[in-house]
Length: 116
Length: 116
DNA sequence: TCATTTGTTCAATGACTTTTGAACAAAAGG
DNA sequence: CCTTTTGTTCAAAAGTCATTGAACAAATGA
Image (cartoon, protein in one colour):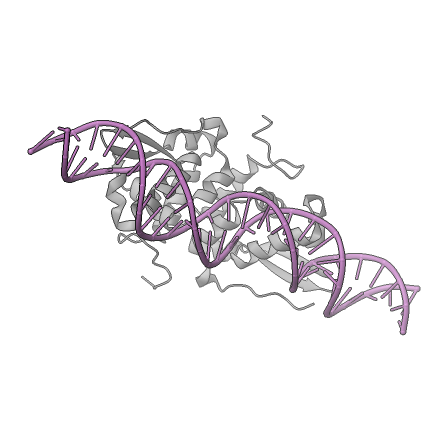
């Protein structure tokens, strides 16, 4: 499979980053990516919904400039574009991750509402 | 005019905050609010678009828990809900303001794209 | 009372979002 | 070659978003 398109760093817009993270599922994906030092295989998010829907969420995050996606065999591996985002918006990504962590549980979805 | 509804602090969701700030006009409003120590009269944003559209944007920000709106005479005054947001998501609001400042110019809309 | 100021609400429009299942594509393994 | 694995793309549906101008409401001031 071919590697997908990624926007160049200069084209990463703040509003697009926030838009990408305005969805609870994608916030949960962010936290999982932040909690994992290596790349994550896209398939390992299977507990978060249907394949086609996840594919849609991955594309959103990739098009916003939040993640890099790499193809290998039949699989795809994702990781955060830490350096690019840090250079454009210093401190932003870490802060978003910290805030998201307080909202997202290990299970994958929102807490706060349930009081945990 | 009656004061509008505001969500209680516990109901302020991260995804709603990010959603409210995923729009360039509202990011510009955020920066203007952050740059002004006192409340701002809603009418003073007239350079950012049509009245009815601004009213829509104000409502979005208010419903997300980002701002407080107070009525006085025929006017409305807006300010950031700094304390509430700081307690729920420490550091988040200041970071978003800092990042937004690098994207938004005094004129009101986006820079970065134009290279300024 | 009548007009002005300030802002909201409404209806309409066109565009985007999220979600689903079915169809498709590409690599790998038998 | 056939099958399995992994993931994308497509079409459809239902919902939300941003924007506009017109109509409305409420306070103020002549």
